[in-house]
Image 1 (tube, rainbow, N blue to C red):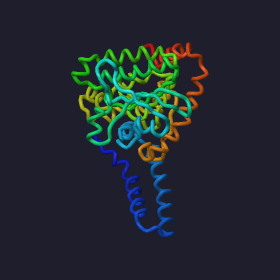
Image 2 (image 1 turned 135 degrees about the vertical axis):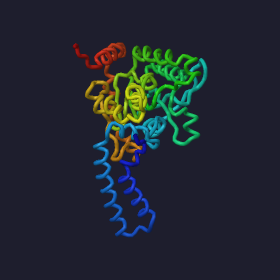
Image 3 (image 1 turned 60 degrees about the vertical axis):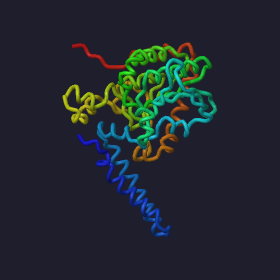
Image 4 (image 1 turned 30 degrees about the horizontal axis):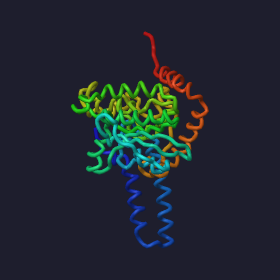
Length: 317
């Protein structure tokens, strides 16, 4: 297994370097034409490479540290965001961001995983792995949203819930289970978007919604490919094979009825142009919100129940 994603992205990176080098020099007319031609090549090469990504390569893309995170989407798409902290029981968990904002004029609540980009941020955010207080903080915000009749936007991007001893001592499994139960019964619209890596119960703990969306190159799975490979193949190097077998990509999950909609990403992935990725996502969120607001609040839990009960394919031997 080679975790170096730059292998398949090398042609893209080479063109970007050429464009950057030419753009840094004097802006002569001939040079501008050369830059424009390289940019056309970049789009063509990016589209070609990203149209043929394997499930493992998509996993690597989903983990790219330059992809937009929850706070990036909040900055791009929401106004007047006010973050809230703490679960009122133990403490605050920076791996989960919660708060209230306005989405195109509509007051709403936001919950989402938050990773870090540099070492300091990664440690502070615990690599995007929530502890029990993170799930309880998210539920606290969602219950407030229900009290004030506000729709909820959830952004999923975690490799999984934190497996440390302290998290287990504070009731990690119970916190996730509580979120699953309570989210299923909320009487306000919940729109979930998998923006990167949706891993295991850590993802599902804030992902019980009326609409489940996935960015084109994100992944969503019950366990990481490495974890699956270690269990079934007894070797984490078999992660590429595990990723293919697990059906973790957006097209696979759409076909299986796990998600509702695939949101396209910019040429070269969301990390190539985060602002454009948000620009594409915005109208999709707006469309789904308008549809859900037409449903009577009392009917939302029933529709949500039906949605999750019909997931999966079963065959009798």
